Length: 168
Image (cartoon, rainbow, N blue to C red):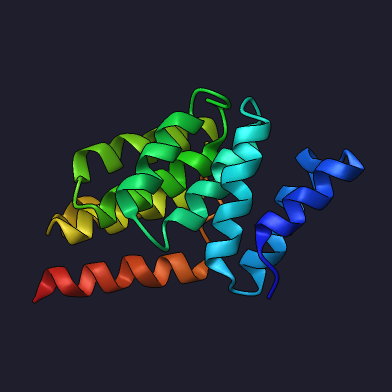
């Protein structure tokens, strides 16, 4: 596989560096060339520092290498697009992995506020409550928001599983 530096030199010659690098990064990531993808997104952020997407994608790739770096990237990305619910959802999931449940809860709540009909933030909150042993809270969250969101039958199965765990 070629080195990203070779591609960067070519992009500078053609003048399309800021749009070609992220595309190359996405292709590398899709084909599991994670280091090369990270390099592309790092360069894209350097070349176009105001562009939110390159920071967001960089954070996604960094999750494969260093969770703390990814958290910092997501934190910085919030400044560039503070109303993007998927960012808060991913950030919340990452904070759970970093064992920072209170911060994760805040990110899930932000995502839910930005996308009130989305099921993912509610499921994130329910999973968080389950991981903390708050099964009643998890079940209540899933049941309460069932009609106002896009929760489907698989989400209700989760709710039922929580209910069964509570009975044990």
